[in-house]
Length: 235
Image (cartoon, rainbow, N blue to C red; front, side, top):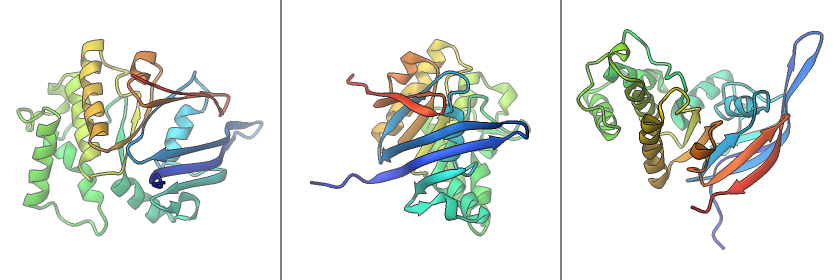
C-alpha cells in the first residue's frame, strides 16, 4: 500500500488565551492530517475555533499544547526565525480583506514575499518574469501597473492569490476568500482555487458559506474548540 504524503499534521492541538480574569480555551484537543493535494473547508460559527486553527496552521501563532508538524518539523520546536522562513517558503496566505499594500502596483504586491526569502536576495529579472507569469495565470496580465484602488474586489483577490503562489508554497491557507465578493466574482475566485488544487496544491479554507465549502474535497465543522463533525464531498 502506498503511503500518503502529508503536507501537514496536527496532533491534540490546544490553544488557550489568558485574559487575566478568565482563560479562553479556543482549541481543546484538535487532531487532523492534511495529505498533499488535499482541499479542506473549515466551517463553524463565530468563536468555534476555526480562525484560531487557521492562524496556527499558518505558523502565525504557537499552540499552548500539542504538535503541529509542517515540512517534517514540529512547529513548537522552531525558533522565530525558523517560523518566519517556514511561513515564507511553505505557506501562501489569502485573506478576506486582501491585505494589499495600497501604494504598490499589482506587480509590486506580488513581489512582496520575494523580499523575505532566506538571505534576502535582490529581486532578479527571472523573479520578475515569474511574477508576470503568475499574474497572467490569475488573469491580471493587463493590470500589472495598476494599484489596488484601481481594481475591483475580485481583481484584488486575484492579486492576493498570485502573491500567495509566488514562492511556490506547499500549502495555501484561505480565510474567507470569497467573503467580500458578489456571487459571480466569488465563483471566479473558486474556479482559480479549484484549478490550483487540481494542479496538486494543498488548500485549507475557512468559510461560512455552505456552497463554497462544498467545492472542497472534505469539510471540517468546528464547535467550541473541537471538531464537531466531518464530511466528504462526493461531487
